[in-house]
Length: 409
Image 1 (spheres, one colour):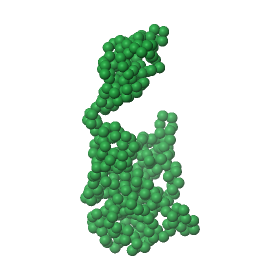
Image 2 (cartoon, helix red, strand yellow):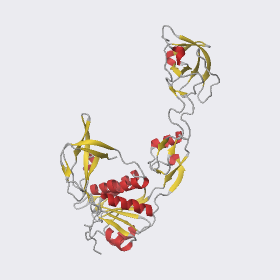
Image 3 (spheres, helix red, strand yellow):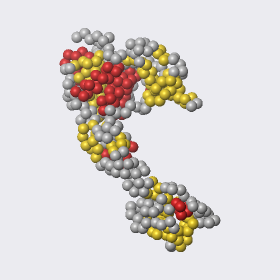
Image 4 (tube, one colour):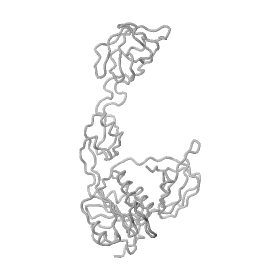
């Protein structure tokens, strides 16, 4: 079958088609799990405050709870004298309310008693007798107190559906009273690198051979994107072996690097076009680097055929597939910052160009220093910490332009 790689789709059209395909394959499968097991999953629910937080006014200091007006003018030479009422232990509800001339000992996190509106730290107060407190410093209203509902009001939104579960999300869910949360099931993923020239990272490399970078890069990218990697493996350029891997039905997604163009040993596009339905959906994305990319489906899973060059493979995953995942699940995009371009960058109209840059401080501004490297030069990963995209309708960007640059995690 003759496949015309020149019939490329734009980057956004390819992303849209990928999102549509994931929807048709019912990739938004939800399940409920314990919050401590949710790290790396994507939220399938909004996380709201179930109650006011804190549910009571609490002290942020060890000290004495009191009415702030009662200690106006207190000093080391003329302390204010208060009647001691009680010691409030952690987790204890105060037994006594306070009048203007009274105080109670309290510890960090303790519940502030009625009538008190400030806490004086222990270093500025002391017991004179068992029943008398001397205060040597004034305090202001609500000083050293977290008031009822200061942290959150009931119904406040903390995290939206589509947010990746990070350690911060786990901590806040626990604080908000979520023992279990609803998440999207991770897409089961198989990673394959192809090529007769590929050897494991630890192998001695004879002339003509290269180390397997892509399967390791893709595994890291996939896990970072919230996918469940079941296996990664290397397959030689043997049509039957590649066909067997593509037909595996135990996964939602196959990420395969190499064999994606239209050369004699580029079997993936032909195999999926001949054996899959709906089959080959994209063969060629108008992007540089990464044009020889294929995207296919057999009605049960997705096969993403990525370029063999390490930088191209990485780029396509980040700016095509990861963006499609973010749009599909409604996830927030990676952080972007405005930066001033340090030199001209040319581009060819008709293809979006992904330009990697190194962001650095320049006075009060961020400066974007373009990083130029061939699509096989992995030293780019050492030099670049962000990227921007020049659209297919532009001929480049000029020195001094302010561009939004997306951070590489």
